[in-house]
Image 1 (cartoon, rainbow, N blue to C red):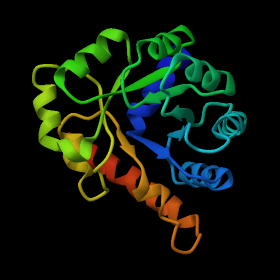
Image 2: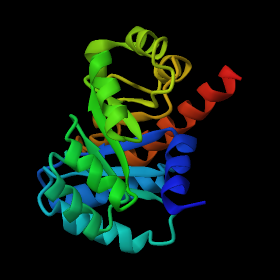
Image 3: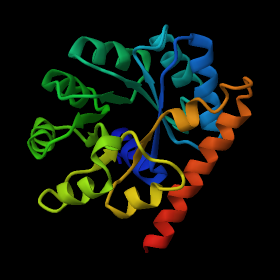
Image 4: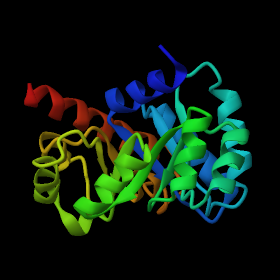
Amino acid sequence: MSKKFENLRKIIDGGIVVIIRSDNTEEAHKIAEACIKGGVGAVEVTMSVPGALKIIESLSQTYKNGEVVIGAGTILDAETARAAILAGAELLVSPHLNVDMVKVSNRYQAISIVGAMTPKDVMETLEAGADMVKLFPADFLGVQYVKTIKAPIPQASIVPTGGATPQNVHEWIHAGCDAIGVGSYVTKAHKKDGDYNKVTLAAREFVEAIQKARQQGK
């Protein structure tokens, strides 16, 4: 099995991609490490983070044996996609469809998760060759919208981003989502007192909730 398909399977099996946004390089790196310690199998460092490529490079070296899928987020164009891949990213995430970005992802066998909202968006994303569809903004669309999209387009691998919590994640999983994009619930858990163990605990809580939801759905 190719590395890309191994990584794709890892993302789907784990069911979670943590989205790391921060205005501080050191903080973002610590958040990533804390999430991984909590059992998260895929992290996405957004390009809005200062020194994002350096963080991706460092994480890619630390986890070079494939324990974790290291990704780059907010990839808006082909140039940024290639830079992220050169830094070691094996996952590229975009809030919208940029066909050239997807081409670069496929050229170098990186996984692409591309943002979409309407049925037209979803189909164009699939036709462009994206591996997964980032339903965005999911908190405005809701769980029922996933079911509505999956009815005529069941082949779409949906990753909703925004709105999921450990308490409601079962609804998203049972609606047919293959993975969940998670942000502040996990990545800001340390904000009150700077305790990154709280990030680890929040990450573990989410991972366990997803696995429990899947067991209940069988």
